[in-house]
Length: 240
Image 1 (cartoon, rainbow, N blue to C red):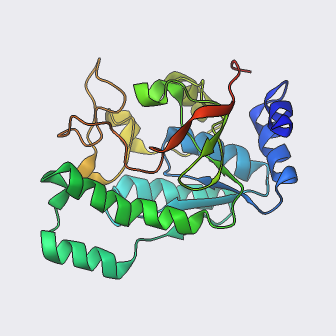
Image 2 (image 1 turned 180 degrees about the horizontal axis):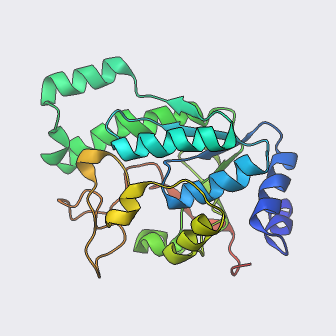
């Protein structure tokens, strides 16, 4: 993996993204949920016209504020963001059989909902992709504390690039303000990790970063998109 080792050393994030796009032309994709992390990366890609596909997963249960920042982002950069939706038949079957809030009833039901609305659409979005760019940060949870810049994702069979792994939440806010990046106004109301509306709440001072996600559960706060990382990173280096 020498090519990735060269990318992470002595280059800023924009240069890293440009080089990735050159190494894997047409086969690098960035998934955005329009949170602060993703707005920072999105700004880097879209404002520099880096040829990396930008897409989002619309679960059908997003906050109005999320759709608003989606619209603002498209308007600011004048570029499209691909939308991937869950299979209508699968959603209809689940809701008909279990009701609109089945995810509150058990971890199994919640994971079923996440799988239908997020994981399966993501698999379609990542077809023919070599490198998946994400906004994951080590600070977000204990499960992500050993995050690497580059690592293998066994579930999707590709390389994952986490350029903001060592950024703090405050780093993100400073960057967004400095570059006038559109952001989700829920961040001003105590929301730090923003997902589907029924499954996300603001956090209180001192609470874990992921405490606002699936707050009624005591299990790991993951939906399946990033839960199957290999234990062995490709490259793990200090912040550059």
